[in-house]
Each structure stands twice: as structure tokens, then as C-alpha cells.
Amino acid sequence: MNIKIKFPDGSIKEHPKNISPLEIAESISHGLAKQTIVAEINGKLVDLDFKIEKDAEIKLYKFDSKEGEEVYWHSSAHLLAQAVKELFPNIKVAIGPAIENGFYYDFDKEIPFTDKDLEKIEQKMKELSKQNAVYKRQELTKTEAIKLFSEMKEDYKVELLEEIPDDEIISAYTQGNFTDLCRGPHILDTGKIKAIKLLKTSGAYWRGDSKNKMLQRIYGVSFPSKKDLKTFLYNLEEAKKRDHRKIGKELDLYSFSDEVGPGLVLWHPKGAMMRSIVEDYWQKRHFEDGYSVVYTPHIGKVGLWEKSGHLEFYKESMYSAIEVDNMEYYLKPMNCPFHIAIYQDQKRSYRELPIKYAEMGTVYRYENSGSLHGLMRVRGFTQDDAHIICTPDQLDNEIEEVIEFSLNILKAFGFKDFEIYLSTMPEKAVGEKEDWDKATASLKKALEKLRIDYEVDEGGGAFYGPKIDIKIKDALNRSWQCSTIQFDFNLPARFEMEYIGEDNQPHRPFMVHRALLGSLERFFGTLIEYHAGNFPIWLCPTQVKILPISDNYIDYAKKVNAELIKSGIRSEVDFKNEKIGYKIREAEIHKIPYMFIVGQKEMESGSVSVRRHGEGDLGSKKIVEILKEIQREIEERK
Image 1: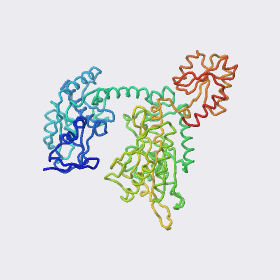
Image 2: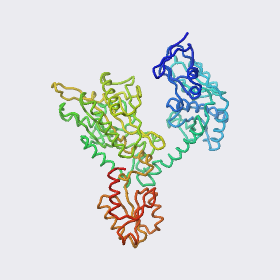
Image 3: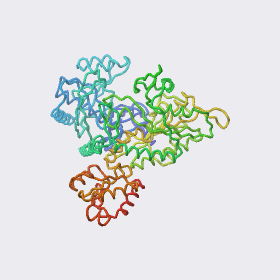
Image 4: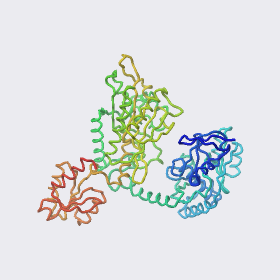
């Protein structure tokens, strides 16, 4: 008996019943079968030896897909656990998922793993991979699974099993002599894992709870080829050089203080200067595009957060209440309710819409101390929020404008490559389906009209509306979350937002939440790592450093400096009593775009000897000449 298999291109082919995805791949080409990691049958990921019993839609994923990577690295985590168990038989295993760049596994070991341990484990993984052990799936009842893992003395697995509903079918996977509790799917066999590198080890609380036992976590990465691993490791070293925490300290941009509190940023003068430049540009562009800039308080009464739903759904991320005059107030985790309060301060007519409010609003959200990470994850940050409130008829135009506006601003900061994702209605959602459909169609229509490539994340929207996410890709092919354009059907309903329509009747407006830079702190972290600290000149806190060869030329250096400052150039004089070679090295380390070296010859001719960061000597130039070049570069935002 044959069944019909539908492929992503819409073609349909007949195959024998109980055929496997691997056999289907082989029927297309042997090369495809060798490269396929996992299959998707009717929307569900399955092992390659899964038996297809009825008509189905199929997708085959290679390693270069998100699905392929995740399954490959998850299978590698199982291989890691097998290697550790063979070398340290008394260790208990906990969990081992795939993560963004590789995998990890947590182990119950009293003494932390050493570097030598990692070398031995990595070697053992390589030996085991060559055994080509098949990942065999077995399905068990809850009782059978608890019995199996109890006999193996794997207490952490038993704990997880005890929380699973009694009637749920449980799966386990075995490769060689190692069995693990796992939903799957997995790669076909360990031989697919060709190149392995264990990266580091650290402590991790069981289930991320500091009240639980500290486990030992091993991080690793694996690839189908040694070439891919080599590229990854090169990029990893490059990423370390670009680490915003390292560069931020070297350039004296910001710091954190234990006395002030973890996750609370202290902006130093140079960082504050950059931030001021960004905010000024942001505000100028918003005014030009018809936004109204607003400012709102840092705290709000308890009733506001009850009405918005934050206390019901978001309380664990909010700071404790502050009591004032027998009334509870909360530090704001978001700006949205305040913008709505401004909108509702008076009755609104359709003639006033669209209304576009924008704010650089500082918000406060509790983050577990273990998840804090430089500027990327902090507890107090400034969100560049905007809310576009419009009628249904204005929707398409406003969405198109905000996408174009967002991308143009991001390009001004030197970003060039973007990944765009459209997330649609999840299973659990608020609002009318008709509104969801209209909003989603508006997002799609705008992207297609602007000829922007995008991926659809079906069901990936927030419960209150569909959204577009804009991610930035850097030189190391890393993606950075940046802008979000998000419909919100929740807050307009909760706050009963209205406008009076042309029919003289009240109507609910559409509200689009837009964070262009996202968190200003995270944006700066991204900006630092993207440019490796070599910022576009218009953003640099110091654009020119004047380096007198000796103290005899300080007065001339001051004169040049005054002329630059008068012309709007951010410049400084290096007054240190050091040799010129030292001064140049210092300026290079601090990534100053231009260095003006001045001595007797320059003073007599009214010129400067120009040096460009990363390029070297550009020769002697008249001040007026080089001034015009720099001003043009700043104006063009190169």
C-alpha cells in the first residue's frame, strides 16, 4: 500500500507505507541522505528512522538549518554525557540541552572538572563517535521509566519523571551503553559527529535555583566537519576581542559598582557623550518623522499595574512595592501604561490620528544575578519606546513607514545586514481573530511592498499581538536582537482606549508598540561588539587627538584644538610628557579616528601631520583642508 508524501515545493510523490524519512532522502539523492540531520512530518520533528504510516507533509533539515543545528548539538550533549559516565562512573547526570552555539550538560560532581578532565572527556567523545552507535528510541510508561532510572541511580531523571502526568508516554534514547531520558529527536548515529571541542566548565544550580545543589556544567560545540569547527573557534577568539565588557573598560565608557548594585550601569564621561549623541540623533529623527516626544515618571501607583496586567503576569520581574502615604507604588518595568494615560487625558477624534508618542524611558526589571551580562542584561535600562495609535484605515501606511524609519536609523549606525522575522498568532491569544488577521496582513504587506526578505515564525507572536523583529548580523555572522514592531490588543482593551470616528461613535484604535534601538544599554553593547570599538566617526566621543611632539608645541596644539572645537569637532590635546611614539600608541589603543601630530614644521606652515586610526600616516595637511574632510565624513555618517 502506498501513501502520499508532500514536499515543501508542493510536489507530491507516492511511497510505500512505513517508509522512513531517511529512505525518502535516499530516493532523492545519496548526498541528501548523508547530509540530512532530522525530518519534520506534519509539523513535528522526528528521527530519520521514523516510520510514516499515512499521507504526510515532509521537510528534511541539514545542519545549516536551525532545526538541524539543535538536533545535532542535542545529540552531541548525549555523547558528552556518555563520555563522562565512562570516565567517571559514579557521577549522576542532570540535563543536557542544545543552546545557541553548541550544547552543555550538567553533572553532579563534588569537585569541579579540571582542564585535564576536559581534555580526557573530549578525547573519549571522539573515540565514542567513531563507534557509529545508533541513537535508539524506546517509549515507556511513567512507571517503567521511573523503575529504569531508579535502577540506574539517576536521581535527577527520577525527579523530572515524577512531575510528568501519569498517562504521558515517555521516551528514552540509548547510544552504546548510555541511556538518557529525552523527547528527541536525534541524529542517526554518533558517527555523524565529526569535530568536537569542549569549551569550558562552570557551576550551575540544579534547575537554576540557588536553593538547590550546585552542579558542574560542561559547555561544548560540535560540527560535521573540522573546517566548520576551525571557523567557529576563529570567530570565538574574534568575539573575545570584541567583547563589549573588555572594550568598554579599555575605552572608559561605563562601569558597574558592587556598592551601587549589580546590573546598574554607571556611564562615564566618554560613554555619556556617546549616549548623548545617540539620543540627540534619535530625537531629531523622531521629530522629523512626526513623533511627539514625551517624558513619564519612573514609578506608578499599584492600581495602574493591576489594570495593565503587569502585577498579574509580570510581577516576578518587578521590584518590590514602595509605600508612600499608605499607597503602594512600583518602579515601572515598561512605559506603555504612561503613554496610554497621556492619550486618555482628553477625548480623541479620528482627525487627530495617528498619534505617535516616543520616549527614552528608563525602566527597571529584576534579573537573576546569574543572568546579568555586561550591558546586554541589566536591571535598570533605558527603552526607546514609541506607541503609534491609529485607525484601521491608517494601519498599512503607518506600518510601512515605521519599518522603513527603523531600518534607516539602524543603517546610520553602520549596520548593514539584517534578519527580519514575522511572528504570528499563538494558540493562546487575546483580541479578536479578525484584528489579528488584519494586523498580520498589514505587517506582511509592508515587508513585501518594501521588498524586504523575512522569515515567518508561525505561532511565535506574543499573546497580545503579532510582531516584526529586526536582528542585526555582524562580521562574525552573529545575530543581535534590536528593533521590535509589536501590535498590542491587550492594553487598549484593558484601558478602554477610544477615539470618536467619522460616524460620531467611539471606536477602539490599533496600537503598535515600537522599540527601535530596544534597550539603549543593550544597543550600546551591540554597537561596541559590531564595530569592535571602531565606531563611525560621528559617534566617537573624541574624534581628533592632537599630539604635540614636545612641550614646545603645546601652545600651537591648543590653538589647533580651539579651531576644531569651534568648528564642532570633538578634539583633545595630549599633554602628557611622553615620547610621540607612546602618544600615538595610546591614541590607537583608544581607537581615536584622527591623530594630529604637531611640531616645528607644522607650527611654521600652519598645518598638521595627519594619522588615521587603523590606516597610518596620511601626510601633512592644512588645517582648513583636513577640517573639511572630517566634517564631510561626519555629515555623511560613514
